Amino acid sequence: MGIDVWGRGSHGAGSFGSYCALQHISPSSLGLSVAIFGQAWSWESEQDKDEWTWEKWWDYERLLWAGPRIIIAKSKGTVSGAESLSTRDESFGRKDEEDEEETYPIPEMSRPEGTLPCKCTSPPYKAISTFFPRKVPPNPAKGIPLE
Image 1: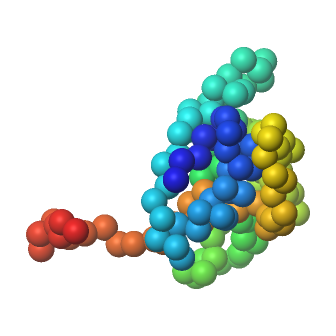
Image 2 (image 1 turned 180 degrees about the vertical axis):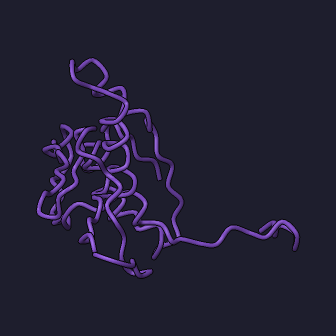
């Protein structure tokens, strides 16, 4: 199944709405393959804006693929494996406060002419990576299985 991140003919209208199409394809439960087209969308759609920077692009890119950043409270003393210190710095204009929320502009889903409306209700935004199971990479010393 193919998804165009630019939204050309894709359910969810592309961009941050691409998750709507992935919700239907359900690669982890149905075992379907997904081809994602137009991955440069996160740069190309914003590059002409006056205040667009590499740092802003990286935050936008991460939000699309990995999802909202989770800020865990800064602790005093040691940090356990379940805790993390925020690595973002306000000097770069990035979120560094626990109560700030990242926003993602989910587009209005237009219906192509001559098609029936989708009666689905999409869940709240999910990053693209959340639709695919995480697996440990193969160990080359043991040989790579060709399945």
